[in-house]
Image (tube, rainbow, N blue to C red; front, side, top):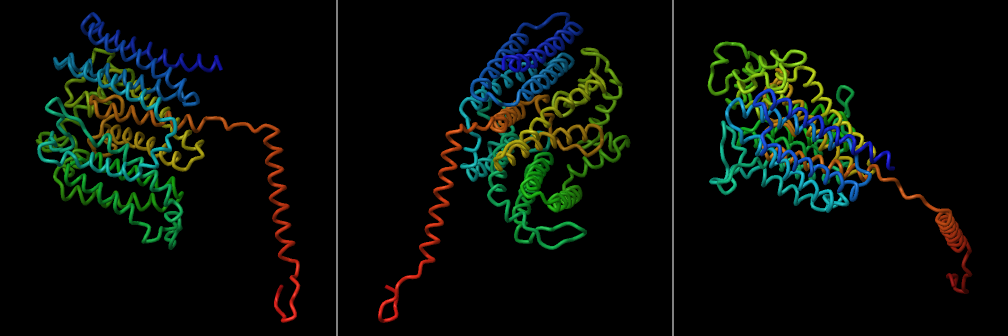
Length: 476
C-alpha cells in the first residue's frame, strides 16, 4: 500500500514540476524574471492540489489517481499560454483571474470529495436537477440579467462584478437527470419495434424523450444563438441513451436528427450559415473579410498552427496573440504555435487518459445509475474536445465551445473541475473491494437456505394430504 501511495503522489509532484518548468522557461524568455504575484497564486494552487489529494486518500481511498495529475497539467499549460498572451496584448489580468478561478474550483472539489460519500444520492433529486438545469440554461434570456456578447446570449451578469456562463453548470445537472431518467426507463426504451436495414428501431411511443431533448437543443440555438451548447446537450443524451439500451438504432436516429437540425439551422440562422461558409471556404477573399461571421479568425489560427510545425516556435517565442480570442476559443491553436504538433499530441493524450479513466470506471461500476452518469460525463468532455479541435483544424464548423481546463473562463473551469471530482467519486465506488464473507457467514447462509427449503417441503406436503370428508360430503 505504501508503494502504491508513493506512485500516486509521484504523479502529482511530477505534474507540478513540469508545470513550474514551463512557467519558468516562458517568463525567462519574455520578461527575464518570474512575476511575484502570479507565482504566489501558482503556489497556493499547488498547495490546494496537495490538500485535495490528501482528502481523496481520506474520504475516497479507492478513487482513480489518474485524473487529477492530468487536470493539473492541462490547467497549467492553458494558464501558461494565457499568461503568454497577456504579455503580448498588454493585459496581465486574465491569467491571474484564471488562477483565482482554479483555486475556487479546487476548494469546491474538496468539499464535494468530503461530503458526497455516495454519488447515488443524486438519483433522488433527478427532477430537481432537471428544473435547476433548465433554469440555468434559460437564465440568460431573463431581461436585465442576461448579457449578449458577440451575438450569443449565454452569459448572466453577477451584480455588476462580472459575467458567468450558466450553461456550463446546466450540463452537469441535466446529466444527473438524464442518468436517473434513463436508468428508470431503460427497459421500455430498449424494447424494439420494426426492423429497418438490419436495425431494430424503437417504438414510436418511446421516441418522446429524444424528441423533447432535440426541441430543447434547437430552442437553445434559436433563443441564445449558442450552437455549441445545443449540440453538446443533444449528443450527451443520445450517448447515454445508447449506453442505457445498447441499441444502435438510437445512434442512427440521433445522427439523423442532428443532421436535419444542422441543415435547417444553417439555412434559417445567419450566424450558423456564416460558420458553415467559413468552414467550407475559409480562404475566399469575400468570406475572409466579411464581418461578422468571416473566416479571419480560423485562417489566423491555421497559420499559427502551421508556423509551429513539428516542435513549435518555443515557449515565449511565437505570436499567439495575433489570433482573435487566442486565450479562450483558440487556446488550442496558441499551444500548437509554441509547442508544435508534439505538444498538441501530448495535450490530446492527457485528455485521452482522463476519458479512458472515466470509461473504465463506467465499465467497472455495477450500479446502473453510476454507469450512465460516468459515461455521460466522460462523453461530454470527449465531445467537447472533439468539436473544439475539429473546428480549429477545419474538420467541422466552429461551434463556440472551449477546451476544458485550458481556455480562459471561470465558468468552464469550475464546471469541468466538478465534472472531474464526480468521476473521482464514482471511481471510488467502482474500485472499492467487495467485503469478504467469513466461514461463519457462509454457514449461516447455508442454514438459512436449508431451513427455507424444509419449510417449502412441509407446505407442499400439507397441501397434498387429503382432508377428511363429513357425512354431508363436504370437507371437515
